[in-house]
Length: 518
Ligand code: C2E
Ligand code: MG
Image 1 (cartoon, rainbow, N blue to C red):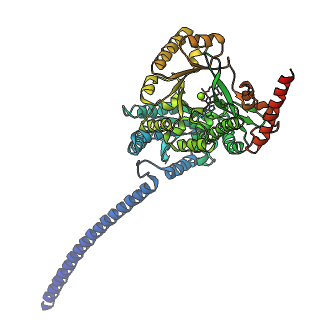
Image 2: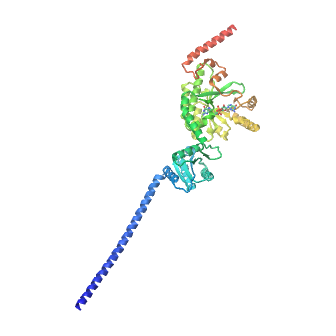
Image 3: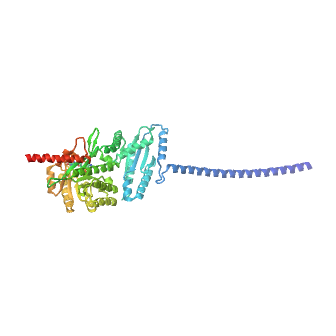
């Protein structure tokens, strides 16, 4: 019995111990589970933070810091993946590139902060409108969109939407954008090349075009390559004197005497003959080449005047064209003064023609440049006057001496009565303000007489003479100079002048002795 009691107690104790152990194990298990859960949560949090960090790092790598939209690396990466993705059909891809083409003007007129704001607004507009496509800000002022399987209509509609949003965003500042469209035919091509093709098409969009976009075509590409070749050849052509000064005389309409001559550039282009400025100036004006060309032309003009003076020939005042691109600062004024001093040219022998379009959005800086030119003694003339809408303001605000009325007033296409009325009004107004008035594009005697009648002082046009090379001009001006040229030389050097003088003396001796014997 005692044995059973002891056994029972033993079993109870053992059971108690077991129960206790079980409880302990359960508690321990619970503790472990809690700990595990805690750890899991902790790791989850850590994974989340790491993912966030990866995202953040990716954003740093792929986001443009100032505009907060995708950058070039993102665009290259995403486009590459889109091209390589597996599709159940062959998709079409189109790349659009655009920029703000008046960003320089915005910076200049409203300051760099407004310029930055314009770029930021453009980026945000792109993000909002093109959000479902692959898009990015490639460089500071170049944005791209890659369209997958979109029709031309969808693409051009989106372009128009972005364009309109940007142009109307502010009453004072219009953000003007131009778009180039490249339809991708070979996705294995370098993406940067595709961007370059789209950007190239974009460069051909003109402000006057009805559309704000252009599609890349082979024809456009060959024009581009041609332009590129021309730009590269220009520097050499300058050195080789392949640019020539042609002079077109301006006549006093009362006395029919030449009172001045406008210098107009021509390019003696190998294999193509003498090129008119219309064939290359637009290209040069879109780059800084125009400034080099003008510097060259001004020096050639001053050399010509010096040559006349040194040869005792009454010099004709020369009117030189000034491209609007010079007017942003007065560096060119120093250059003109330096040339004038170097060639010892009297002030009244130089007239500067500034096209009206260069003065249409005049600011304080441009005004200061014009005023300096005037104070330095250059005679100033507004060219193509009346071709835009702001003549009255221009005359009121600037120290101008002459105006040259745009030849469109005389053109056969303009309704003659209307053109005549405007001419009458402009001439009367200009005379009232004491300007010398020149009319260009006079092609008939009738026009010359009519202009004289309504008060125009000076005329220029094919009726009197087309622009001619220097040799012909000298002949036209009834000078001796034709005798002074050696056939293989176009520009005599200063060393030649002594020889020239001998020729002049000889000429007069022959002439005088002929007169004496006659
Ligand atoms: P512009 O300054 O208005 O020059 C007058 C243009 O009208 C010249 O064209 C001249 O040949 C043309 N013209 C003159 N009379 C008549 C006429 O009776 N009928 C017609 N239909 N046309 C006439 P061109 O020489 O082809 O020059 C074109 C423009 O190129 C010039 O227009 C001028 O803005 C620019 N340009 C020419 N040379 C230079 C230059 O050296 N530097 C700069 N910056 N621009 C230049
Ligand atoms: Mg001119």
